[in-house]
Length: 488
Figure (cartoon, rainbow, N blue to C red):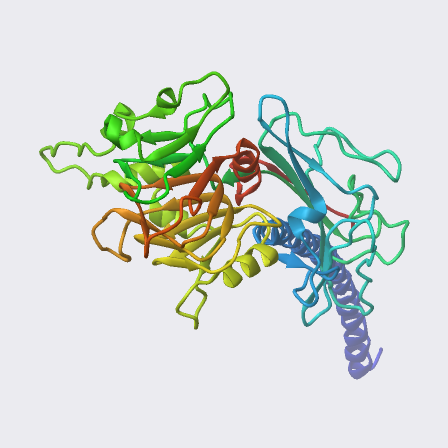
């Protein structure tokens, strides 16, 4: 007979073996569950990484659109897109605006090389950009390191349906006049090799990074929406100084009808005798006046009040402003394509200030707060689109203005409108383009001038068309589309 103690030990050994088997099975099951969970975790990590790269690329591409808009509405820049020793503006580097036979606006690209396009990269601390042109291809270099260094490149005035097939190449004219496509391509890392194509016109995310492409349509909101048809336009009347040289007004443009003076009131024969007008050949001088203009006179009619009260009606001057410049005064003054003079801390605006603003900001509107006195020519190298928010323009000796001059007759910021006065010296002066008064227009001399000391206002359709199609603010239109891609 076996010892009872031995039988007990043998049973214990058998029960321990079964437990071990059960534990091993449970451990195997737990390992399978952990492996399955890890698989899901790894998948989620890859998905999150792809999403992060895609989002980073999209934000870079979207930033490229806003950056390009700011540059288009900005001033002159250098090849690094900065303002140190600038040469030309962003618009001058990449956009060509021309008028065809019916004066519709055509916008095309001026770039000819596949990689000579504005490019920016974030190096971990700040953005660095390159704005190469046809004479200097200074391209942005890739940033070394393991961190994310997003970059974008913008393709300006490049129709979506037309892709470059070789370099150099020339983008065709945009088929819809007045509109400009803008393509911004973003990558989560700037390509380091020329074989990488994530920032190309037809991008491919072949370097394992995020890729996004944003396609939008831009338009140049003209600063001179409706150029006047006459050399001198006034909502009310025009009264040149008596016992002084006649106001010389010239309009030899058949396209505008040859009108010299356009006014809202009726001129008498004595009124017309104060002008020296010259119209298209064969047109009698008295027939070049477009006085008693009912459309101008209608601007002074205030809309009747209603019950309940309607929104405040525009003033007569505001309606005149909108009819020519295309938007309300406050909106116009706050647009990005406008420069104000004087610029603080200065309190006066001079001819030198205006010429400097024109040189630094080609294609921009100049807004003068208050009355303006000029002691030198303005608009010689490029015409000026000048809005004077005041009651007078004073011209110095032999001053010539090339451009469009609009005078509000207001005393800013909320003063009542009054007659506009152009103060003249005892020397010949001129305005080549057009002159518009929001109220009535007077001329004045400080002393007795000679017969030749006249103000000549010469209508120039070429100047006005240049201002209409090339001066203003670039705006983003609704629509467009976005594309995302990220390689695992």
